[in-house]
Picture 1 (cartoon, rainbow, N blue to C red):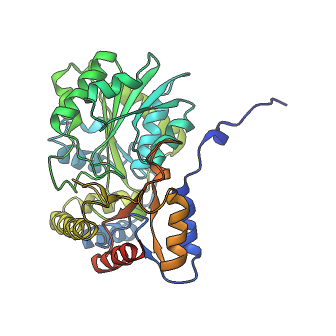
Picture 2 (tube, rainbow, N blue to C red; picture 1 turned 120 degrees about the horizontal axis):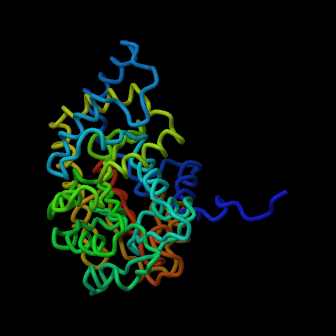
Picture 3 (cartoon, one colour; picture 1 turned 180 degrees about the vertical axis):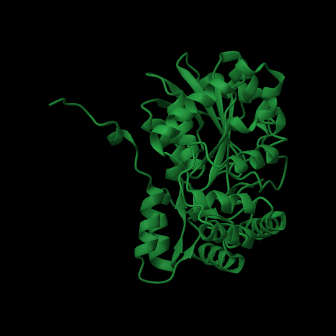
Length: 383
């Protein structure tokens, strides 16, 4: 029998899942500020599109890249983000699967991927799952983007993952910063994965349009994969529907191999729901305004002393509790036990041993507003 360590044993467990399980097992109702589940539900157009697909018998297999009509509609939606041809658009079971598949399609033995020090933990898990390793860039510590990338670079780096607006930071990258990342990647001949899950929730600044920068290059030299989802703007979290674009035909062919080997095909009725959801522009406007109003109210309640970073976009705000505790992981459990409020500890979003990991917690901004504000008031009173 071959001996050795299974690669899956190297995938780090996330304390965020532990908090989620504790909330689920809690004996009393919980004000859930620990998870991004939107109060504004999926548009009626999407509900009817899903039901109509079932009634009309659209339940058979489709190809690994997804529904052709949806490719066409998504390519049109992305006209201001790289103008992708429909044959480079991939429909996926959520943006999480899209990122995982992209990483598998670019993985090489000994390869490395650059993430921001402040990152969404699944990105780290997904890199680890490929057998590659992660390098963390110290963005936001006073260095330029190029200096931060140079500080963690090696000749083994194959990709940089950019998330704007960011989870958990709420950071919205400026066009100048994105251009620095892109120029650095092109110069070093590495790829860029642009996670734009929260693109419909930019409150200050402009949406990330990294793939647009590729248009200045010939197709064979383009480097940007862009990743999108119906979970956020269209409130379809449980439907698991996302999409991604590949920078050129060669990268699209490799990604097709991975998708054919792993998923066979995305859910057919859900794709029809997504196609219908694309027409629900009023929903996006309402949802954006609701989360923005909650952000403004929560930031006002917390005040400058508690807000770690003023969120320019996204669904979350980072709170600095360093004046109250040296271990926000244990503190999150105590808050749940004492005042029935769920919060996400910063340890889940930073490299192990990072000096600010045990100072921060993340609060959601997308849930029902009055319940959210009540939870924030209870938390500040508890502090």
